[in-house]
Image 1 (cartoon, helix red, strand yellow):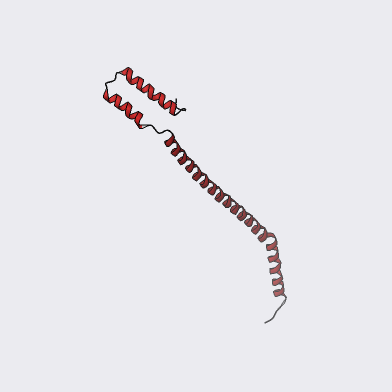
Image 2 (cartoon, helix red, strand yellow):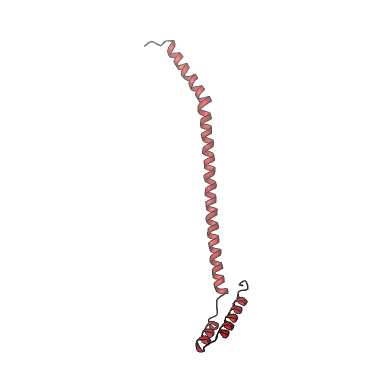
Amino acid sequence: MQINMTLFLQVLNFWVTYWFLNKFMFKPVLLVLDQKKQKEDLIKKKISQKEKLLLQMERSSKKELDDFKTSMSVKYEVEMPVLECAVNEISDEKINKNESEKIIQAATELLVERVPHVD
């Protein structure tokens, strides 16, 4: 096997080409790809944080709504004796239109006293 000068020139050419491609092609491209990967990871991290925050806010608002509904049902519960009394009065007697309007007015005033924000 004869080793001549062309083999050395081919090896030298290979290493020069490899160095040139590595220096001016591979590293910049890999750097850009790495930066894109970092940005993508950062965006994914922010999205997961926002999703967690959204779930916490959703749970919190649901709990507040449930608490509000519970407090309102207790606070503005209609007293049954008042309703039974009104029903008994209406069913026991025949009421004319003026008396029924008076009962409706009294019930409205009672509700307005109980729930001040109702018009």
